[in-house]
Image 1 (cartoon, rainbow over the protein chains, first blue to last red):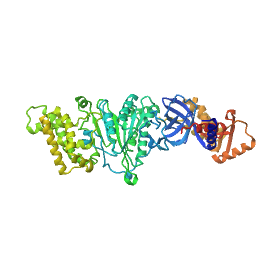
Image 2: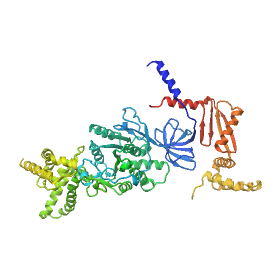
Image 3: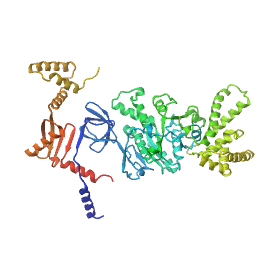
Image 4: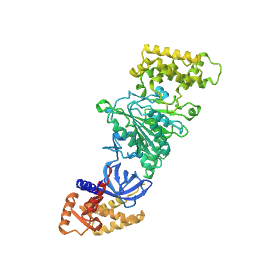
Length: 501
Length: 136
């Protein structure tokens, strides 16, 4: 590159440059502390308007008082001094969005942090947006296949639904979310994983796992780590959902995971208390419900006239010692369309995923379940409910009649079948076959420790010997009597061989 | 008890002392000082007076404008500037506070309340720097 070339380029750039004269609104920093700045002046600023500091730091005006405003600083605040000039921008905070963002890791401002170079973006989306109205929406009717048997059969999730994953620490909440992302391969779904206040080591682990599973071709990670200031944790989920909305506006289906909203609420509490807003229950501010409801309400399924597309939200909430009656869990439970409740006791009993089937519900998802799954899941639910009832009862007496005994045995097998290792999502056709064998009683005389082996063998055998059934479920989402006969024969044959060996 | 802001006090002082004769004003001033002393607000008098000044200016259509320039303004541009400011802010009277700042290199910078119009060469160079070093 010659010097002349550089000079010519510079000349051209300078020729193209034109500075516009405009009146700017300014204020002055009165004090700075813990990611918060008090600023005087800026009398006509809007709520949540973006402001800039001299070194290019970005802030958001949250508190508008009589003659000062409270600003949260979304950058390193150590260089901001008292008396610095603060400029209002007249815009609310925006994040850059483009198709190039897929497969990348970005921070809460949409800037890459994975070291793979800047993300070219020609558009920006505001992070705060009013959720789509009733007229633009469509009811939930298409399934999100999570690949987890217990969820797909008993607590099904539909596209556009908001399903809470709730449980104590170390009960496999993130594992369910990651399994769901892994299972979206070829399901025409874009995934956004928003990590809020997580350890960077955990995020790295998840990123590696997702890369290994080949899921980064349709996944975006938005991260606000625990070492970053609270304002970034506060805006990260809104950034995530804005990115999701960009893809939904193209008519695509998006799955967004917020991991986790309890840390989000804690970050917001920190900001609110520093801004001297009055504390309420558990020291959270009064508008913590609105904080989450306006976020989760942006998950939706739009009808064709308004461009189609959907955002399915899987928020995660961490409870303390299984207490679901704490403030944040009750709030989020009431906002979402159901919850998957994970329990420590079950986890240590070896029932993994540790889903408590009795307390978990899906309020709208059953409409989205495919017909084939519906046929087997109905009986399964009943089997499990009866099992739970009898399990407690049977501990008192040893003399049980045959029918009760049989129900207990069936329940035990159902629990066994619903166990599933991590990172091993199962496609829905296979799930249907396994659950069919269970609810029709084919597993009743297999001993419990052989169930897993039986299940694996059954899938292998039927995939080769009941091809029609698989094909039919995949294409028509249900089965005909003819292919059911084929499946019955295949299961019977396999079972005979299995019992002999 | 709700707290009184300095702005509220200044506004109240303005309202009671408006349209009063000199002797009445004396009485009002006395009462104001006593009130401030009783509420232990004497330390805030500086701020209250500043606000009072702003309120009076606002009511009289008077605007204080800070003009920053590298060299002293000549008579004709100053007149033009006053005319422009009167139009823009719909003010009856403009008070110019001129500040010399050689670092601004050229042009002027106008500050009115919390609005600034920066026409200095320094600002333009800064904008050019931002333009040339922007991320593409």
